[in-house]
Image 1 (tube, helix red, strand yellow):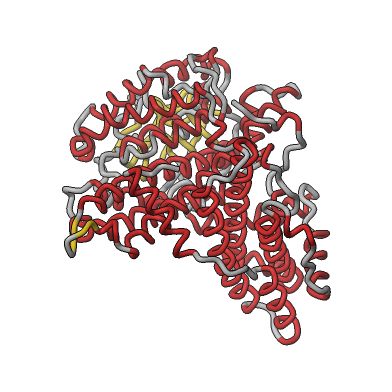
Image 2 (tube, one colour):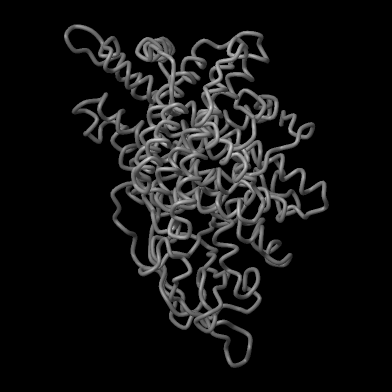
Length: 596
C-alpha cells in the first residue's frame, strides 16, 4: 500500500476537528497498488459472472445457493484477504479488505451475506478467541467451507444490546453453559455453521459464546419475509437448555460488550464502503437508462433536471469514497504503529479501529444515506420503469433501506459521534477546549482577508477551517449552557453530528483533490468541480444545522452573537453550481458509467 503515514505524525481519532491534515498523509483511491487494483477487478468480475446473472434465484432463497456462492468466493481468496496467513488468510492490509467490501458491496443480498460472514461472523473469533478456537474455526471460515453468523439482537433489545435477556448458567458438572433465550434478525442464520452468541451468565455477566450448528437445544425459526435483501437468510435463533461446552466461551466472562462494540467499529466503515460500491453501480445503471430513454424526441440525459440528479449522485458518492479511504488509511497506519510497538495482530487492528471509532460512526451514517439518495434518484430517473421489478434499480431501492438500521441505527451513530468526541475531550485525548475558546474569541475580531487567499486551495482550506470553527462554536456553547443536560438533548447532538459529518467529508474531498494535483501537477477539473460543489452546498447545510442547534438553547445577546459567528463561518463566495453539475453529468454521459 502506498502511504507516507510513517513519515508523519498521524492524527488521532477526532483530531481532524482541531488540526490540519496534509494531502501527503491522506490515502486515496488513486493510491491503490497494482495488487489492490487486481483485487478490485476480481471482485467486479465475480459480481458480473457469478452474482448478477442469478439475482432472482438468490432473492427466492434457493436452498444451498448462497452458501455455494460463499464457497466460490472463498476459493478466490476473497473471504481471507486481511486475515493472518497462519490461519489460512492472505495477510493483506486493512485498505485491501476495504476494497473487497466496496467492490463486492453492489451484490445486493449476496453482499449482505459475505459482509456478515467476513465481519461479525468471523472477526470475533480472530480478535477474542483462544489459539485453540482460532485454529479450529478460522481455516474453515476463511475457505468458505463453513459460514459464520452473529447473534446479538433480541426482541426487547435492539440499540440497547446490553439489555439482552438470553441467559447462561454453568452445568452441575462444570462442563457446559446452559443457554436459554432467543435472538432475532440473524443474518446467515439459516445456513451458518458457527454462531457468535451473547448471553448473560447467571443473568448478569454479559458474555459471548461460540455455538455450532447441531448443538443440543439450539434451533432456528423459518426465514423472515423482508422488504429488501430478500435473498439474505434472516432467521430467529432459539436456545432451550442449549449445552455449549465451557471451552466455547469467547473472550472474558462478563466482557462480552468489548466484543459486541469493538466489532461494530470495523463493520461501520465496511458498511459505508459497500454502500459506495452499490452507489457506483446504481449510478451506472441510471446513466445507461437516461441515455437510451427518449422523451420529446431526445434522450432524457439531455435534460438539465436529469443531469442535476446524475451529477449530485456522483458528487456525494465521490466525497463519501474520499472519506472512507482517508479513514481506512488512518486505521492502517495506526495498526502498523501498534504492531511495531509490539502489540499482537488482533490487538493492533482492534486498537486502530477503536482510535477512529468516531470517524467510523460518521461514515456509517453518510455511506448509508448516500446510497439511499442514489437509489431513490435512480428510481426517479427510471420513472415508471423504476417501480418495476424488470429493472434492477427497484431491487437496489429496496435493498438499500436496511443500511440505515443495522450496525447501529443512524440516530445512534449520530449520538455516538458527539458522545465519543466529548468523552475523549474530558479524558484529555483531544484538546477541544482551547480551539473552542479561540473560535468564540474570534467573534469579537475583524475578519482577516489576508494575502494567503491567493495561494492554491487557500480559499477552500479556509472555508473548511471555518466549518470546524462553526462546530466548535456551536458545541462549545451547548456544553457551556446545558452541561450535563446536553446528553438528553438528542436533537442538538444530531445537529452538531451532521455539521461534523459534512465537514469531515468536505475536508476529505479537498485533500484528495489536492493530492491528485500534487501528483500530476495540475488539477483534475471534474473532481475539483465536485469538491467545490460539495463545499458550496455544505456551507448552507452546516449553517442550518448550527442555527437549529443554537436556537434550541441560546437566547438574547448570546444568540445574536452566536448567530453572527455562525453566519461568518459559513459564508461562501458566489459559485455556479448548475454549470459545475452539468460538467460532471456530461462526463458521466460520455463515459456511460460512473467514471471518477
